[in-house]
Image (cartoon, rainbow, N blue to C red):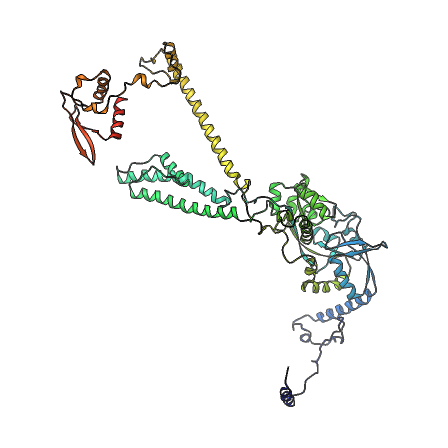
Length: 632
C-alpha cells in the first residue's frame, strides 16, 4: 500500500502530465453488447478503413453492408420465434426425457448449446425425435432424422451428426464443425498379451525369419569357405570338416553348447569366433527382452485397428442407423471394405440405445467388439468401473474387465443439420464457432469424467505373474521335439525291417550263405537267432554270443612272457591273433621287446616282420585298450 509521501509525489508529477485524450478515431465502427451497430458504416468509407485491401472489389463493401442488414433482420425475425428441433437418443451428446406433464425435453451437450443460443436470440422450441432412432441415408431414409429435416418438418437437427457424403443431398450441414468424432472399439480385456507367445515376444516377426535363415545358411557357408581355403592354400594340416559337422556346430552354438571341432587354421578360427560372437550378442538381447516382457504388465490388445477386425473376421456390434453403419454401407467411405462382413453376419447393428445393455449382452457374454463414439464409451466405462468397484474394492482385474483400443475405428466431423435453403446456419454458426474455439463444447463433452484415465490398457498397479499362456510355446516345442523323435524312431525301425527282409529274401533264394556269384554272405541279424534254434541251440533270441566266440584274454603281463611253449590254449589263441595283425609279441625265436619312455609314457618296442617298430603301451588304461583291440 502506498504511503502518504508517495501519494504526494505522484500528485505533483501528475500536474505536469498532458490531459488524457478520450476522443475516438474517425470512422470507427462501434458495437453494442449484443453485437448490434452503434454507428452505421457509410457506403463511401475507404476500403483501408474497414480492414480491406486496396485492390478489393468495389462490390465487397456492398456485400458487407447487405450481410449486416440480413443478420439484423434475422435477429428481429427469430426474436420470440417458436422452433421445432429434432434430435437423437445418443447419450451423452443428445437425449431426451419425458416430464410428468408429458412434455419431452432435450438433454445432453447438444441442448446445452441450444440453451446458449436461446438466451442469445430469445426463441422457444419443442423437441421431437424420429420414429426410428437412426440418422438416415439414401437407402434408409424412412422414419429417420434426415427425412424429418429434408421434409422441413423441423427447423433444426440438434445432434452430433457425422458429416457423410451421402446425406449432403438431403440436408445442409452447419459450416462450423462441433468436434472431430472418433468411434472406438471396446472388447474384453485379454488375460495375456496379444503380441504373441512369451518366447517369441522379444523379437518381431522378421527378426525371427532372419535368425532362421542365418541358422540354415551359416553352416554351408563355413563349409564352403573351408573347402575353398584348403584348395587355394594346399594346406594338408587343417582337415576339412564335413557339412554335417559344420551344421551341427552352428546349431550347437545357438543352443549355447560346446563343439568337438578344433580348427587349426587362423581363417577357420575367425569364422567360428564370428559366429560365436554373433550368437552371444543375440542371446543376450533375447534374454534381456524376454525378462522385460514377462515381468512387465504391458500388453497389446488382439484388435486395435479396422484391419484386425477384417483379417481376423471378428464379430463387432454398433448402433443401428449410426455413423459406423452408413460408413460401411456407403461406397465412397473409408469403411466400405467391411461391407462383406455384413453379408457374412459378422457385423451386428443393434436397435438398443442403452449402452450398458449392449456392453453386457454383446461384449461380456458373447465376446463381441463394441464400436461406439468416444464420449459415450468414456462415460460407459466410468460408470461400469464405479459399479464394479463397489462390489470388489481392491481387485483391479475385477474393476476393469474391458479394454478400449487406442486407434479410432472411424473418424468423422460432426455438426448440426438444417433444411436445405434455411438461413439459420448464418445466424447460429458464428456463435457455434465461438463455443468451439473457446473449448466449451469439448469441456461439456467430458464434464462428467474424472481427469485420470479410467481402465487403461496397461494396469500399472497389477503385478505381472507368469501364466500358462506365457509358457505355451515351451510346451509346443517339447511336444514337437517328442513327436519328431518318435517319427524318426519309427522310420529307423521301418528301414531296418525293410533291409532285414531284403537280406532274408536274398539268403532264401540263393542258398544258405551263398550269393548268385558263389560268394559267401552272412545271414541277416533277424535270422541268426532262428538258425541257432534250428541247430539245437536253446539260446534266446537277441541274447549276446560274444562269450561263445571270443576266448577271454590272458593277463596283460603274459605278452612279455618268453616261455611261449608253456602257454595254455586260450593264451596261444590270443597270441595267434596278435601274429595275424602283423605284430611279433616276443618269444625265443623273435626276441623280447625293449622298454622305452616316449613323451613321458612307458612303451614296449617290438620289431614287426617287415622291419618296422611297433609300440605297445604299458600304462594300465592304454594297455587295456590295446588288449581289447587284439583279442577282438
